[in-house]
Length: 394
Image (cartoon, rainbow, N blue to C red; front, side):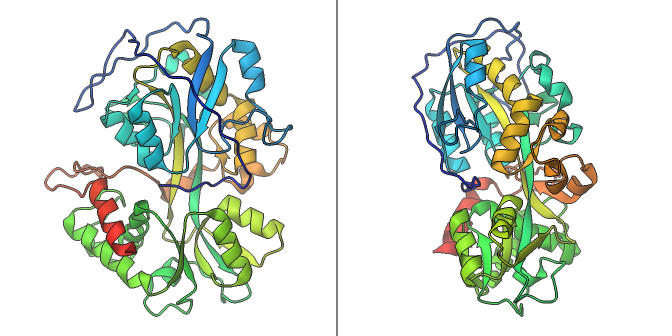
């Protein structure tokens, strides 16, 4: 669902094919496939770990010699890191379904698909010492756990912000209304994220402005609520000058003036301001959607020791700080904030301010079983979100 957020070129490696191997231990329940949890202990590495990752999450110095949190891990553990990058959550899910991967950095719009698809195994957090230092607000959430069972190690997080051109958009907006109102003064120069998950942004706005719809969670929409969100998106289509998923295109659009306001990420704001573009951004008063990524372990990995060694390493204060700063996100490990080269990094990305995240609704995978806890109705599953988005964009 997410396009490449990283503002650097990334080289992708290849991974060796895996053979199926089982792990002993307990299993999950409640409609989730019975995939056993590894009981441990974590022993010597098998020699390799095959990683699927967002670009910028696994850097070995080939992109920039100064950016490397892989080589030391390989030398210490003997686990060679074979990495393949992906550009969307759909691609990540497809690759995991095909097999051949030990771990994946899954966003919230992929993680439940992987869990309910039986593609990943429960994670024994007792075998991941660095898990103890992960911010509590990221642990055992709807997108990385089911029925009190953890399915991964949190990696980082970010909010989807409202960015505007400070020269042409005045006064400064404080609401998402500027991108949704049919009479928006920015009509024709609004930019919107090109993904089915953007339907949740419409639902978020309706949650604040049309309370009679009863929306309490933007990823849990019954038929009536979903129809209202789609109708709002159809209205917005007349305001949109460009739908974006490529960060470079969004940056160019704001620099050349064809886009003046729309949804964005903090890392893009920072990059544009670094080029002295006249932009600013906020989390509007209605709150926002956002993303939180999770390192997950394949159900049938034969490299389970290397997999556990990797997820513990990437969650360490040192590696997590390096990734967060290179990539442009809030780290998940609380101890990382003291290790970033920019001492203000965690303040810029609100890493240690849980109050900031209270009205950020992290991407999640819509399911027929309503994620807001309702049992008297069925909610619209993600497949229908994809269909509706395709029709909207056609």
